[in-house]
Amino acid sequence: MTQGITAAEPPPVVTRDLPAGDLQPDDTFGVIITFSASEDDFNAVGVTDVAPAGWDVIVTTALCNPAPFAGYIPTPGTIQYAWFSNFPAGTEFTVVYQVTVPAEATAGSYVFPDGFIEYFLIGVPQDHVPITGDTTVTVGGVDIPPTVDATDPDDGATGVPVDTAIEVTFSEAMDTASAEGAFSIDPAATGSFGWDAGDTVMTFTPDADLAGGRL
Image (cartoon, rainbow, N blue to C red; front, side):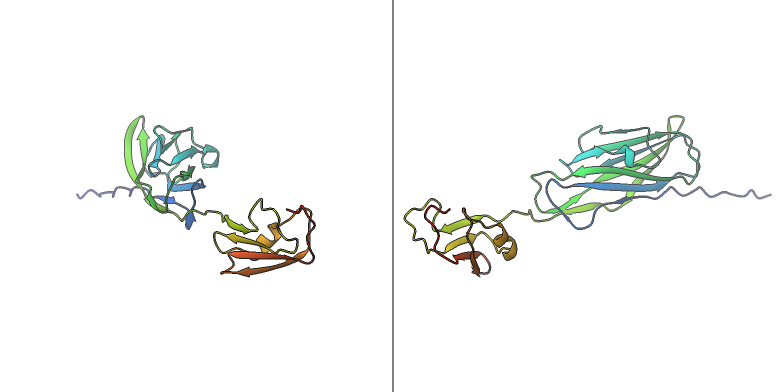
């Protein structure tokens, strides 16, 4: 008589979702890990994930489903969640935590180097399953706001003719409408704007002579 052989249930697939597109220093983003409960009996499950070196992680148990018993940061950049209960086979888990890009991060790709889930039965490990899915995020070039490189007349200049146009040179090409909207003199005066040098030099020409003492 030949006994039937029951194939072992395959381990669950654990996936990590990371944001697409470029991040910037000081950005905070969510990491989502999803998996299904094992077909085998267990009464505890733990999730461990590791962010790129030097990146801070933030526990967000309220965003997880089902809600974990607790969330931990055992070492910098490492996050752990734990559940203690008898979950029906196939229970869907959604794990969420947050990560902050360091202020000093430079442009490039950064790897989430490790991550896994473990199932336990009465404290004894049953399965150790690696996290698959997204493994890298990209930090783009740092956004540096434009600066004013020069003005003509110079800041604090005296003896300037009252019919002088005001010229401002910026460090990069500007959104002309925004720059014109931000420009002001005190007291206010009407005039027209012109742009040169690839929208890096703005000239304000007043409609009439400026009164002495205008800034």
